[in-house]
Length: 225
Image 1: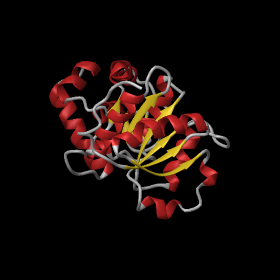
Image 2: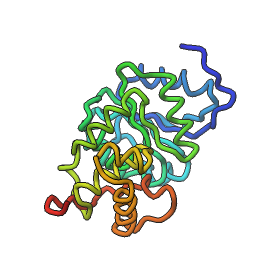
Image 3: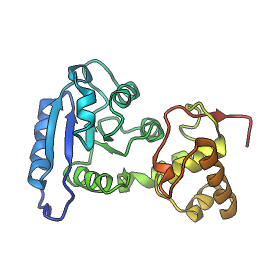
């Protein structure tokens, strides 16, 4: 393990869900010295029989997407149906942009590919999410922004957002400013600002952090620019 200062970090109540015992053991070795409380560990979602009770006792779920009985985005769909209060950070071997974009669309609070990322990213993600933010691995954020700005992931959602609104929403989800989004999408800043207000109205969202609360079912209207 690398030398990391654990003293100033926010501490949380965590559930580990990964079908590999060695991965869970490695995460325990990272989290406990930082003061995080591991409330429970599971190798599969089917092992969880008290999701309602855990909802009240947990801050964050660290979730692998490829488990024993479910794989990929389907795992996330089931997890979100079981847990409506804890934040979810995906820690998965799946590192393709389509999966990552869909996960953010579904409302995950962070996504960390296992390959090439580990202790520092997990601790940074927990810190950021526990303090009300969302987390994207810095090395991937540029690639993800490019993927989203080119329409990646936008053919999957169903709901009430147009193509452009969906792209703006997903870039807001990454924490980009109106100016950065305008540059990425080739739009005017005021256009981005007005579309953002329209997204708020359509989805009934309020507050400065409205973009963090991503609904699972929303519209993608291919015919409206």
